[in-house]
Image 1 (cartoon, rainbow, N blue to C red):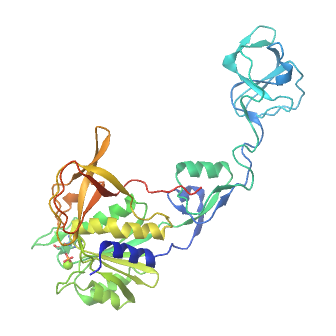
Image 2: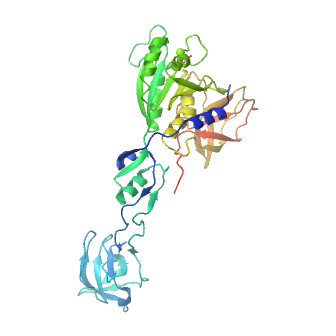
Image 3: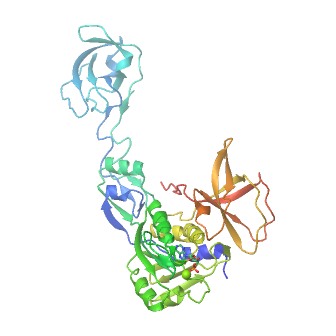
Length: 404
Ligand code: AMP
Ligand code: MG
């Protein structure tokens, strides 16, 4: 049986990003750029005023008073000459007339009647001027391949005239739940049946992370039906199954997948929860067989499927970041497998503390509710006292890495 580190290495070794696509800029939000982006425009397009105020030639304001000769709003233009000692009332963003080099803010002036204004203070030449191309030159690189597009990036690209971006698409993920005991939400679970909650759990995880779930429903633990259902997932960018990957007589997923071209990369990892986890490929499509226990499905999604999806989406840092935090309550000794404990991160007196969830059972959904981190309790670890520093795996914080 492999360990957790070997498992995540095997995933990283086998997954490459999806083929890039070109999309309208707005659709790129949250996606990773597949190519560097260069500006089409110069920003600002002309020297312009950074303030509402008066533009004038610095050299002509020797006595600190100016004559107002016109008005220039943003979007306007002014072609007449402005002589020494004259000023034009100018609004923020308006192009600076050719004869002017300095802008005094409105609040630093006084009206003296007869279109005369007085400068309350003398400003250095060039004050409050935003120069052409100061932010961006035409043809200059704005963002690099690998950068995730956030709202500020979308705004920046729009200002530079970029209407389309080349990105790695957000993966579509087929979810198939397996088990004779399952019924769909809305049906009555009689005779010991249970509701297919994993499909809802995983679809919610995927949506939260910006991926698109495609629900394939429930497959019975019967080879023919299972194979037919699995085949429906072949068009997706990733296939995730839950249940049927352990060592029970009705655990048929791995065997059935092998009928449709699946190559196992690993099966079983020395962790708790998540021991039966299956990973492999059908051609270029990654396939995860996650354990059926809801707590185990939730944990293995976070530990394996989510990073794999981030790899497909072109993220440079697909794995969750680790953070050193203080343990809020004591933890019992570790066992024979790496034990992932769910917990909350709370800010206590200005520092982050990890509070392990009270219930950690892999059969339960509850343990993961509100959890922001997983603590990997090492094999054979002695008990850990409250107040000790531990390194936890962050679940939901942004993981972006600046690339330019
Ligand atoms: P399995 O991995 O198929 O042996 O299932 C392990 C446990 O998880 C069993 O108690 C199943 O009933 C339960 N389980 C399997 N699939 C689901 C599902 N889709 N939703 C909720 N519980 C499930
Ligand atoms: Mg089962």
